[in-house]
Amino acid sequence: MTTTRKKKTAIRTEFGDWQTPLDLARRVCLVASTRISPSMVVEPNCGQGAFLRAATAAFPQASRFLGLDINADYVRAASSIENQSLTVLHQDFFTFDWKRCLSESSGPILVIGNPPWVTNAELMRMGSRNVPEKSNIHDLNGIDAVTGKSNFDISEWMLIREVESLRGKDALLAMLCKTAIARKVIAHAWKNDLPFADAEIREIDAQRYFDVAVDACLLLVRLQPEADSPDSPCRVFDSLDSEVPSYVLGLRHGRLASRVDVVDKYSSLIGEKRPLFHWRSGIKHDCSKVMELTREPDGSFVNGFEERIDLEPDIVFPMLKSSDLANGKIESIRRYMLVPQRAIGDDTKFIALEHSKTWRYLTTHATRLDKRKSTIYRGKPRFSIFGIGEYSFAPWKVAVSGLYKSLKFRVVGPHEGRPVVLDDTCYFLAFQSEEEASLVKKLLDSPVCGEILGAFVFWDSKRPITKEILALVNLREIASFLGQEEAFRKTFSRLLSSEQTTFF
Image (tube, rainbow, N blue to C red; front, side, top):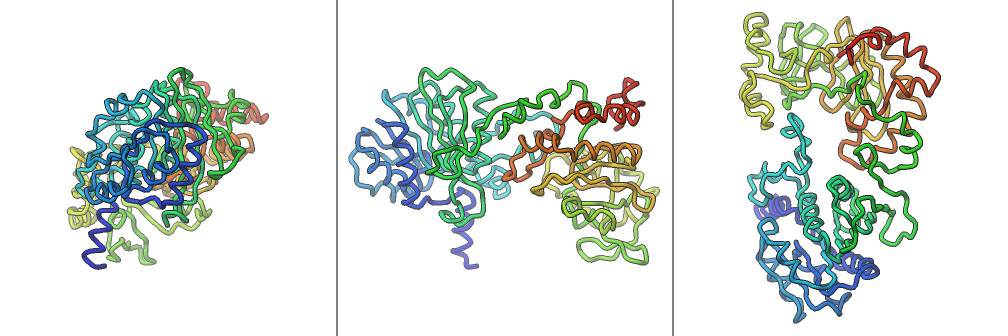
């Protein structure tokens, strides 16, 4: 790749720069024109001005058109649009006073455009300053706030701020974005009592318009001064032109649901105050070439650098990944994981005393392990891992992939007398016996359980299945619903008769 192309690619990544084709901008304006007759049109990230150009033609009654962009070249390009009511400013979205700007209009406002398609983590890796002030927009606690859950799309932050700035106004937000981001914005509005009159998500063909394989949409949020209900619907359509929604989004049990009818029907089977079981994620180490191994016939191991190494077997465990669970390849173990701790925060110095070969191996690759970027490793013992506990070493597990587009639960038992561990793309319940695991798998595989989980899972998400969604299923009530109450009581009698809330 030439230096010029590399520079352009870096700029495109940093600013999430996917310029909107004029024909798509015109179609979006046509959709918007049936919902509002604006006196002011604003494009917050105007780029070269496709939406401004389309809007000046679609809304001739508007008295003001305003565009902003951080790229000076784009500002010059957008300023070339011939319209006396048009102003294009060289401004940073994150520092611009949006509330003051929008308060200057006494008439209906249309905020339209295509915000950057890039995450804050990607920008931080590049050392970019084009990021908002640090903000825990999802109100995450503890470890969730410093792991992948704290990562968010810049467009999500922007869209939430725009909805907040338009509160109480006669306005329409019409923005192209990833479909998953649109859902998060609607969920934020519902959870934070940001009322809107109506909302729609209309799917677009991102491959056709932007040459990217991602689920994208036009998000429409209609706000009105008298809108005071936090329960206004959000209809989802298959295209810009569809007249009948494919489904209606709702907020149930604190989460978005695509089938509110299913959730309401089985409400008694969803959620529990004191869960008997706790879904766990697999082990997180962020250094697969060092920590994940294959085993040779002579008992030696090979790492991701194709180095043959000799390790003490005590802290090396058979491992399964998401692909193994999704494809049903759980009988023939192909991978192993080096597990230097039994619980989060355990001191690792014992390895040097009791497992000298393993300690030598870890110190050989210490530079890679010490440079792991996640803040979860800061201040922890050297070579630390996460997602580790007594549950990780349970002899039996019921596991599912968090990444693949299917709900396939697998019973995972010991391999060669050793518990099988899972990587951090998997979720599982831990059990003492095969009997316990088999009964729970039977419940999870039931049609009613599939319906409930299907109502909360969105398959276009990066990680469609999460432990929070899995935890919504009340297995005890599911057993009763299926006529398995006696089998459940007998199998888990020790758990049900004690103060203990989970085996692990």
